[in-house]
Length: 316
Image (cartoon, rainbow, N blue to C red):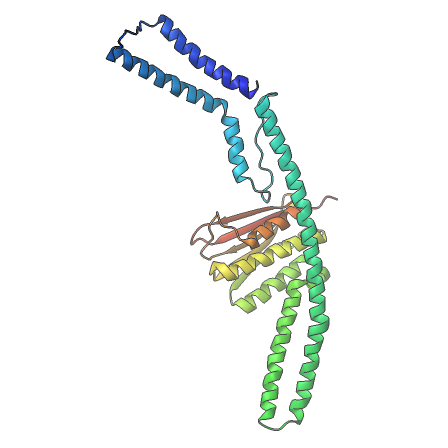
């Protein structure tokens, strides 16, 4: 039934019921109208309006559900769809068209996100390579020059040169740390568990937070794209915890589930508001879409935050 005939039929039911009451009910209208007759007519009109409103709300309920979904849909949370009831008609067809539009938008978003993230990783590799080859080697050369100058210098210049040498060495260590963050070479060489162990160790060293690692030893073989997404999500989760959570202890877990691998990062901080998601969390959701993973974030004020990424195993 089309929307026009649906509304027309609902109004016809109400008007027909009102006509039947006028025909068979012992109600008359005098001239001039009496007070009791006016009260009966007003009450009857009120009943008609209430009945008409209730029937229209029932008839247009699918449109209301569609409107609510349109205002809350998020392409970073795929799978939000409305059930289609009925075979034909304008409303079921509108819902099917909207669901099909969401399918296309989610596919296009996943494709565009994949291109952006791959380009981002390529740019990170390029910057890391330049930092390692250019800045790192230049600072190493400066260290050698400062060392030779300090050996030949007298006091107090020697102490100043040693101090400059220490500052340069600390800067070189920071550059190397940035290179590891931009390009986790250990991920390519030793695998995901070693990369996460190195990441959490460096994180605990630089932040002073306690990090507990719980990694399963029988993890399946993952492709490079899945390992990179798991590593980046863990990296972003640790960064968010250090910046915003005000936590003292974090737990990083990597476990095998039914047909999937689950990464969990939990802290004992102050939690986050469920309605507020910054650029870091939305970036994690985009990475999850890249491999068809599900990202779940649970948090409550004062109860910490738990980030859980469930990545499906690659098809053989």
